Image (cartoon, rainbow, N blue to C red):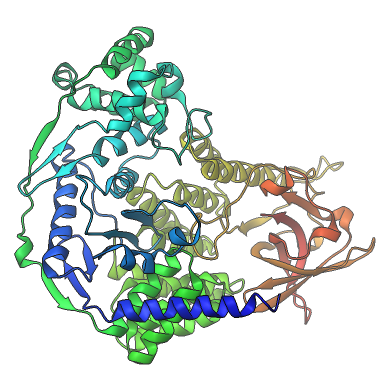
Length: 631
């Protein structure tokens, strides 16, 4: 072990040296109407990259004029001059032997989207992966339950666009798709149309597969074939899909007999030539008029620190934050980066302190306000006063950025904790769904809002729709957990066993905190499965009281047969809970590692859990524990 330590230190020193050497380049920031480009490749290249992205965005406006195109969050493009510069930003791709070195990547974050690419690439379309993922981001703004084949088919269709000075060419086939389509057997059309991300045919990591190639071919037919365009098949299919939510039924209604359509697609996919289209560039601004400025060293380090947090490189992020603050101790962006790094490491108090310092120094971004509100909710169970402060901070975030869906969704959760603000909870929850219908996390969150406010019938209807729309394993798991929570709440409202004359025990809705999207720093993703049977009816001692929920790590737990206690670590604080006995404690698991079987008490320490409890006034105790759910 001691022999390896100097090598680690040397490696870190080398990475810092490379970082500082790259920082000596002249870095500029170019602002176009919809993108920010940060580049060391010179002003001309930076403007060119910004202009290309503006042109690509305009393609969607031309082909689908009613689509929403504003992400509601910044899209920042690091356009670097060579592979060495890209290696500084994306070291993971060079740390593993024989791993492919990308020309560009796309990172979708909760608060920002990022692109990192190098400008010295000679091939015709080096940024297919970037355009593919950006297309997904656009689709996410416009569709709740787009089938996997069409989601990937459209992304592949637009990914191979050729962006020229005055127009964009769409519809060109990728050579690897043609090779697969002309040499391998196609997937039966009805199977392809019904496929989910769990299908054996679908491999998200391998775009050079029959699933992607055939999805591209069908999409190309709907978008480019003269007869399909004349009959507006894509438009009619999308309308039918919206009405039924069923890809196969929509195809049968729009495209006719699927066996005959499959035969037609087999011939279409194997042809040697395909139609392509030219879309004139109609962007309303000249790249020469984009604003441009040179970045100070501190600004560059702060921007890189934020990028490193989004790419899960905390050591590099910490080094960049340190350099940014050293260069300019009063730079708001440096404190935003420091706060975001702390938040990603579950250090919520430190995050809040840094974000508040950014605001004191003049930050005008929605970013620190949003994460202050999130930190206030995650550090400990909020008392009403803290919930009001969190709501005020989140309201400031949406005032600055009215298109930012995550803030509305979080506000809805806060407002669902108080009967006086239920209407605000409903309005903000619906707003988040409207802004990003393709992000089912917000729909799941709204389901919890309905549960918290007692609208179980509405919650059940929504949960069914979410289950129908869920395509990814994460969305399917989260939908199932919501269904389980609704069923649990319904059981709580049933009459007490053995006492038919007495009405059901009244339990005020729990402050259920929904699972957050994967990739959100500090967030959790719920898995599938459930544990033991429902617990007995809540003891009369707590009838009519509010039941609360909070997430954290199990620090310790008494495993004896009698009264017990559980200590939960939440951020830097701890919470102590008590319970009468294990027999009266409901234990559930929605973690994939448990396969539906809740772990024994001896294995609880260190596990992330959500606990449900009733507040008590006795000193030293947070509350009486009712349910523990492993995540």
